[in-house]
Image 1 (cartoon, rainbow, N blue to C red):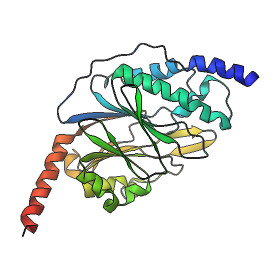
Image 2: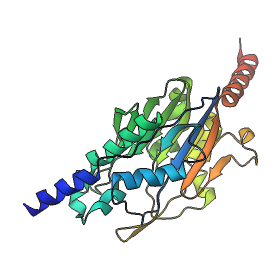
Image 3: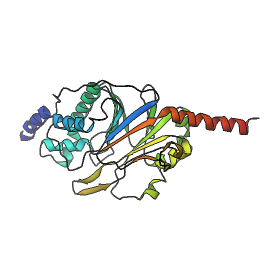
Image 4: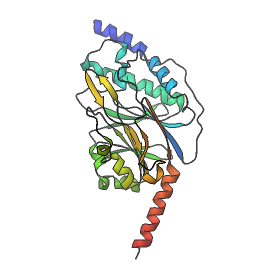
Length: 276
């Protein structure tokens, strides 16, 4: 009985009331992706608290953001609304989804985010647009493709990032970005990182977006790296990285037209060399 009363109080705090809006400035051939990774010790007391913190971080990117991404464990940070046992994390999932739907509708921006972590099974990945959950993918499945109208992005498992052959059909269907949600407790060096998503950016001519939480949560420390990779000629410093571990916010413009042009030139050369 006490737990039911407690959850009724929690539900009220998880209903967003903040008024949010923006004017989106669309740019031809360029898509701005913003990944927001709140510190794992930052518990939110309400949905409005979560939204306020997000809006402060997005202030500079707000007019231009075309896709908003959150890492794993973000939904668990809403546990700060009340003392909560680990086995009850799954109850937070619908309440976390509602603020995401509210943000997506208010800001007119698609969102890709894993659900609440129960630590029993991998969380679903949600694709939310216009305030509605369009897709709900499980990380146990093979890659899934999200359609954002003018461009496509694929959500990958870790094992998917290791095979160019398995992912090539996605490139042939004009997928220009691969997204990988990680939950690593060991910190890899950058050379090891280059064996996965970074390598796929080079071999398949795509943008790679790896998002990992960092910090300590429930006594476990997460040390994963976050980055955005791209074909080396499209990166200003010629490292194959557009962004590397930018802290709470990782904001990057994906130059889709430049990538399309690079792919077209390669396909043309292949046709000239191997025709007949």
